[in-house]
Length: 211
Ligand SMILES: O=C(O)CCC(=O)C(=O)O
Ligand SMILES: [Fe+2]
Image 1 (cartoon, protein in one colour):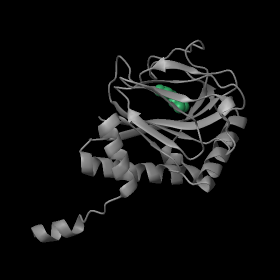
Image 2 (tube, helix red, strand yellow; image 1 turned 180 degrees about the vertical axis):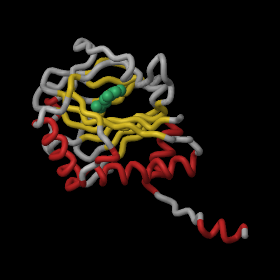
Image 3 (tube, protein in one colour; image 1 turned 135 degrees about the vertical axis):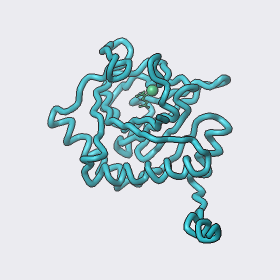
Image 4 (cartoon, protein in one colour; image 1 turned 45 degrees about the vertical axis):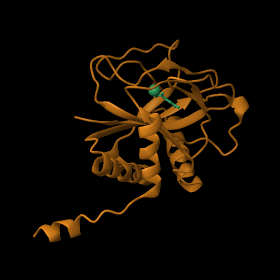
């Protein structure tokens, strides 16, 4: 009986996910290049742009959905929440990969992630998101923040828009390169999006949450 159960639950080690876990344990963040292939980034970017052009994005707010306030001196991006239950083909690829990561985290680190929420984001030229923590006073369920960049291949340093993560010792500057995924501890690491100086910065941002 017991043998049967162990057979069914045979565990396959995933080197990429193992790297993410050891990065998180050591430094509370992980940067993964090419988490999504350039083809995957392209379909996701097209999906974002189609919805943006159909005017479905709204001005981002601070605070959570029950307690939100638009303040352009803090953040200037436009967002659209994704609906996993009505996902298009591109979004299904996205959610499948993220779900694999969540399943892995739950089975190896017992993180107890029960929910996830993601939104598309566009930062037009001139916009930014001032230094902040991704948790709310009235809700501490966000455990891990995930950002995935959907920009064109030729994103330049001069375009700005770096994600800066503040650790005890350093400020880590991360360019929003296509396919790059950044994952970090929501309740611990303050971070900011530096002003975009040229072009539009496109991404998907989300959170893995406990109950
Ligand atoms: O786009 C990024 O690099 C980070 C976005 C962010 O910090 C947020 O939406 O809370
Ligand atoms: Fe954030």
